Amino acid sequence: MSASTPAAAAPEITLKRSLKLWDLIIYGIILIQPTAALPLFGVVDKEARGHVVTTLLIAMVAMLFTAVSYGRMARAYPSAGSAFTYVGRELDRRLGYVVGWSMVMDYLLCPILCIIWCSKAAGNILPLLPYWAWAVFFVLLFTGLNLRGIQASSRTNTWLAGAMMAVVMILFAAIGRYLWVHATGEDMAFFLRPFYDPATFSFPALWRGTAIAALTYVGFDAISTLSEEVENPRRNILLATVLTCLFTGIFSGMQIYAGQLVWPHGSGTFPDVDTAYVFVAGKAGGVWLLQLVNFTLLAASAGSAITAQLASSRLLYSMGRDEVIPKKFFGALSARTRTPVNNVILTGALAMVGVFVLSYELSAEMMNFGAFIAFMGVNMAALVHYSVRGGDRRLVSWLPPVAGCAICFYIWLNLSWKAMLLGSVWMLAGLLYGACRKGGFRTMRDMPV
Image 1 (tube, one colour):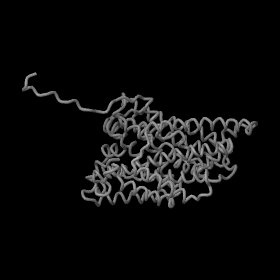
Image 2 (spheres, rainbow, N blue to C red; image 1 turned 90 degrees about the vertical axis):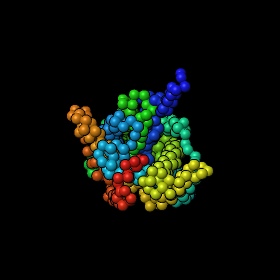
Image 3 (cartoon, rainbow, N blue to C red; image 1 turned 135 degrees about the vertical axis):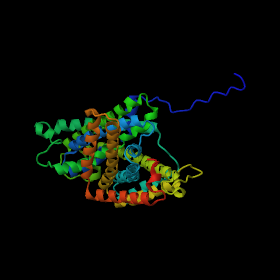
């Protein structure tokens, strides 16, 4: 090559497409957790009058339609994977901001939800310590770990998910043995009652329970963020998202169905409604199984709380760095630990207040308030992208987003008035902030959610 010939440009470094369909499904299962429905059991049982399995199946239908929309939007925006991006680009950047702001609420509420459950579960182990002491302990512990920059590795999460699966198998064996002894001679109505009990069935109660049970599936949408690292993303992202929701619904339904046979609705009051499934395990297998399930769910919730606080502090950092919110406070990093110390302390302070102000049920409903706004937005974005702008009028194109949006909207409407009120106050605050800040909504197009 002559001296005048320009050197060849260095090839652009990109993410390696190495993830297969099975890798994505495992990732989704680990993200949602195999025992995701168990902490919700008592609350949903109370609201749905015993029809917990049915609420999970109804929520699964809504999530399957929505999963199709997420998978199809991942095809259109393979490097985005964000409900905010999908809605902002396909519908309107102001609507995208609304979706993004609702997701910020979810990020901030998740640590509170997990810490409430951890505190209740720890009280089952050492009941002499009151709830407030455990709550303070866990807030300080998780905040301290995140200030030190300690993160859970994906391998740790994989082992934890495997341990949870093993505990569930032990639980199934104990419940099977219990039913063999105690349910002999029961008629078919007994085994169908978890799905439909004419003595307690009510459509309003069923939908109220569904509005809470849907939290079981929250997190499946994160699969779409891996679009740039997947082999054949146009096919595999869609399949993995749908199959993860399907697995979660069926596997969670099996756990809840077994639990409802052991402790039918109305057969007795749970010592603590928030940790009700722990007492189901104790009834089926004794104290050792109660403590095993209690400790397993406590460990899972602790891991979720640490990760959720880490994620929320990183989200606030990204928003501060991009000047969506004040950069001086939210966009600052510690020179020593490279962590957003201000944000970790702020999320810890919010958690400290939240665990004493909010109940587990209300926290779950408020998370669903934000999540379902995002789900409805993605369904509408998919409809606009493929059927309106793309001109695809086939049933398979427009039915999933229309059905998904309609079912999600109806479930959303059945949240409690407290969740609707507090969620609306949060959304109003976000709209006022977005409208009043310099540049208004015009500068919100890159909100990193």
